[in-house]
Image (cartoon, rainbow, N blue to C red; front, side):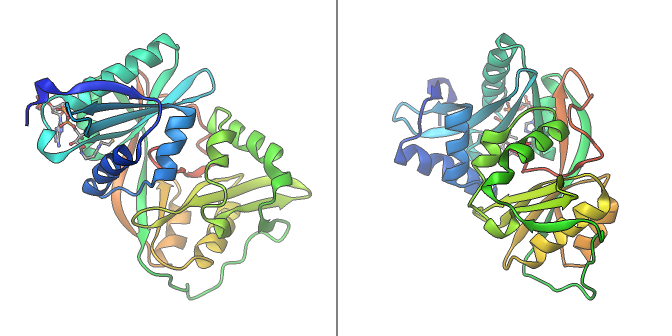
Length: 292
Ligand SMILES: CC(C)(COP(=O)(O)OP(=O)(O)OC[C@H]1O[C@@H](n2cnc3c(N)ncnc32)[C@H](O)[C@@H]1OP(=O)(O)O)[C@@H](O)C(=O)NCCC(=O)NCCS
């Protein structure tokens, strides 16, 4: 294994054998992404890769622009035997240089291992969330009753313009194309909360290699978020992830009662700043660390 012979490239697409390589990186890290997730980065963002002379990808980093103020960096993965040779740092620097040219602030969600790399690069801690896992569906002792004046119902195409606008106000940038990339992947998690004809919350989800995931979960208040989440979680069988903001402890109790336990913590970090763009009150669960 000679890292000095590796080449760096921006990938305009991923061939089937490259998809196998990046899938192996995901599996080695025990992450959850599928080819459908990589497609979102290829179509809407940028995939940076380090590859061998034979074209085998051994390390990746991806970026995703959100509006004109900031961009996500994620999928920072290095094959086991290539770690601690500066590959993650080199790929990060390339991604950050491009974002600097675009005048976008890099944001990411760091695992504890990744946080060590990012702090050295100038990223600062902003807020935290926890990946919670339920292995099998467990019925809570009591059914959850949400606010009487709020209707929780399945999302329909006609919701999309209002839903994208509602999400943009909470997230800090328009990301309708990314949300659209989730649609159809976990239909029973696609829920809207409505009060007097206005959207006051929504949930989406997607399938994954290890577990399905419910997120994002955006809502006006805790009672609405809890109603959306209870409906989504109780309607799904099998393993399930929710990446829940640490500040949302009341919602955490609802998930605890349904058999969720914490798998790993994440820290949201911004380059050169700790000031978040999103609305802390309405952000209950993120899509996932790769998308924000
Ligand atoms: C985290 C990861 C991407 C680091 O890749 P890497 O190429 O080994 O990182 P670098 O060689 O650029 O590391 C740069 C510095 O970060 C720090 N660092 C990197 N990995 C570390 C770890 N596991 N623990 C503590 N510090 C670490 C070290 O200070 C290192 O410098 P040094 O080797 O001179 O001491 C890699 O371990 C990995 O793929 N892990 C699994 C997936 C993951 O957690 N990705 C991060 C997502 S946020």
